[in-house]
Amino acid sequence: MIGRTRIEPLVSAENLRRTYRSRKGLFGATTDVRAVDSVSFAVMPGETLGIVGESGSGKSTMGRLALGLETPDRGQVFYRGLPMPPPGTGEWRKLRQKMQMIYQDPLGALDRRLPVLTQIREPLDIHQPAAARANEEAAAKMLARVGLSPEQGARYPHELSGGQRQRVVLARALMTRPDFLVCDEPVSALDVSIQAQVVNLLADLQAEFGLAMLFISHDLRVVRQISNRVAVMYLGQFVEEGSADDLFAEPLHPYTRALVSAAPQARSAGKAERVVLAGEPPNPARRPAGCAFHPRCPVARPECRVTAPELRSVGPARRVACHAVEAEILSFGEVA
Ligand code: SF4
Image 1 (cartoon, helix red, strand yellow):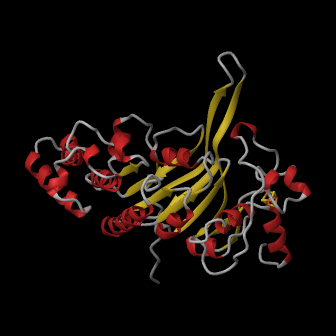
Image 2 (image 1 turned 60 degrees about the vertical axis):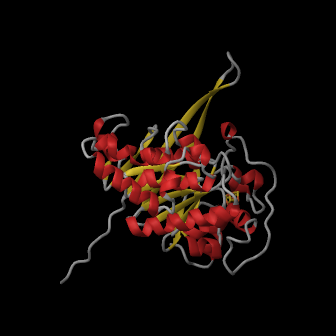
Image 3 (image 1 turned 120 degrees about the vertical axis):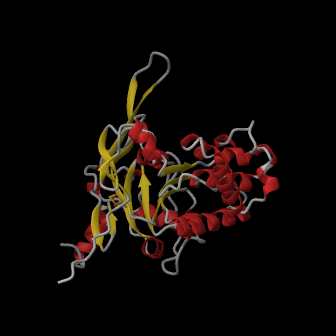
């Protein structure tokens, strides 16, 4: 009998929690805010997991936890099945070459005093200082690969457009041949026409370099374009997860339905009713009891105010945390 090869996740996390302590005023009471709570995920080699949710939902904290830039209070991140080394150690720094971050603001990520080609070759100069000639050639090649000319490579960051600067950031991130990128709102600061170009470039580079990605954005249209799977975050927790095709064709959680209905360009053919959310996103420091979404939920039930729903499997590669969805599916006998 021929055994099947099991593909292991490249990066995974189990039960992550990250709490921040905030103080009201100089001498006021302190409050613990759970930015991320009970989050587990797995990103397979070459796959993109999109993370969506409103501002303050914990998306960026998730990205930093995935790279070990922050330490969870509870839970564990794994790279190729092994626990992430403690931040700041030599082992962690070595691993960071394989895991890179792309931020929203490329100007903030670049050194304004250096020509961009110098900054692209910098990661190689740090790791192999003796190979100056080879580093220069590799940087020039990468510059061309991201669609920039030698003349643009000689410029300083402020002499380039936002889209060109983000290309420089991508080129620099790829110099150490990473296999995992965390992209935190990478195109949100760009014009819509430029966004599409940068997302297309990212998709091409992903295929060429075999990158896995955690793609964080509040923009469902962009997430839809690049993600294989999508997780929806609300107040630090995943409330729904599934393949991008399924989730955008038939969002199940009331929060996902509202997000998808407000982003017609992201919606797949299928349900088209507009769901308007009541109220503002709640304060993470004052998390509602039961289901945290219940004050805004159009189909909240009495138990929603008391009991938090668990993230449960409701089909192949589909998980939802909602009492109403569970009840609906149970009534059709689809969940054991
Ligand atoms: Fe709405 Fe209740 Fe589902 Fe929460 S658990 S999303 S309040 S129906």
